[in-house]
Every structure is written in structure tokens, then in C-alpha cells.
Image 1 (cartoon, helix red, strand yellow):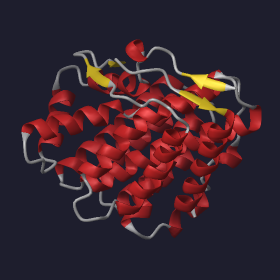
Image 2: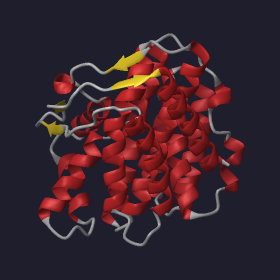
Image 3: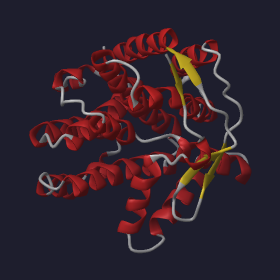
Length: 302
């Protein structure tokens, strides 16, 4: 069986839906200004380069997009898939903390989408502790934690708070010239989303929308590689790039036509991909992609 992507001219990623919620919550354009300021301080050499990186960031789907689809296809909640909260204390390098902050963030989205309130508290606590150790505790303030506890029974509000929290985290890192850390957080979240989808496809079989969406991730992967390349000034992202390119190689070996896709962001935060061809992946190629995704994820969670 092959998996063919829908026409990408009308494809919209959920990450921009959730980010646009963060914008509207401010009541004015302050969030958009903060994002512009954050990227302006990312030590890019030209305004054109900064604009390109901002565009790449927008094109990478948030983990919640994949997690929501996992629920939509009828998958049941499975706590055993998530990175264990007990492992948090063993992450003792900036790299492991940043990547697992992204992983725990994706797991937090997973618990929230499935209305697992107690687990949501645990994973938010893990994310907060890693953020504290990375020196970005401001994103997980006492006020934010209180809002989360107050909205545990309101999934939409809870997901909005989570999205806003990670948005503020990313902006803070860029404002403080720590964009390589931000890239690793984003990479960890994307990887965990792909991992959760991989485990669901393994469990419930191929031939559904989840399989198709995994194939679609080749476009996000290209943007993710570009993002890590842009911030790999000191070689700290070399290993991450090797892992991401090993996934890209599987997409390429599958014979997919991954031609240029023009990403556009309108004033309402809607992202569309235009001009791209359909992508096709066989069962065997998808199996290789799943195996490699699980292998890479396991390496990072230890």
C-alpha cells in the first residue's frame, strides 16, 4: 500500500491555529511584536535571514497537531508510551534537558487531549523543572501553574495555556541569544509527536489518516533541519542534525518527490503550503521510518 498526501495547496498546520490563540489572548498586537523582537535578536546577519528563520519556525507543526489526530483516529490513551517522569533527574546536560523539555511538552499535550488531569500535572511539573534548570523559569511561573490547575477540567483552556507557555519559552530563549536551545526544544516536541504516531500505527495498522500524516512530515522535517542548521553556530546541534538527516534519507530513499513547497503565513496566522507535489511511501518504507523514529527517540530519552 502507498500513502499519498492530499493537495498541499490548502494544507493548514495546527501549530498556527494554536499560536494565533496566543496572539488573540493578548488583546492587541503585543504577542506579534514580541515574536518579531525575539527573532530580530537571534543574531541573524540580515533582516532577510531573520524573516526566513521565522517562516521556517511557523511551518513546523506543533506536537498537539499530531496528538489530536491520534485521538481522532480512535486510539486509546496509553500512558506507557510516554517518557517516564522519573527519568527527569537523569538529564544533566543542556542538550538532554532541552530535547526532553520538548518531549515532555508533547507528552503534556497528549495527556491533556485525552483529559488525563493528574498526568497533565505531572508532565507540566517535569517541564517546569527542566525549564528551571535551563534558566527559563519565567515561562512556568507560579501564576501559570495555578492557571493550569484551575483549568484541568477545561481542555480547550488548558491546551491554550500550554501553547502560550511554550510560545513564551521560545521567545525568551531567542531574546537571550539561546536559539540553539530553542531549536532543540522544538526538535524534541516534533520527534515525540512522530514517535507517538509511529507507535499507534504499529499497534493499529497502516492505511489511515495517521499513516498519511506521517508521510506528510517530510515537509516539516526539511524545515526542522533548516532551523537547526540556522542555529548550529557552535556545533552543539551536530548530533541532532545527523539524526534528522537519517530520517530525511528514508523519505528520499522511498522515492518521494519532495520538491519545493512554498510556505505562506497570512495576517491571521494561517499557514498553507502551495505548489508541492503529492508524496508517496510504501509499507516497507513506512516501516523503516517508524523503526528509525523509535530508535532516535529512545536514544534521547535514555
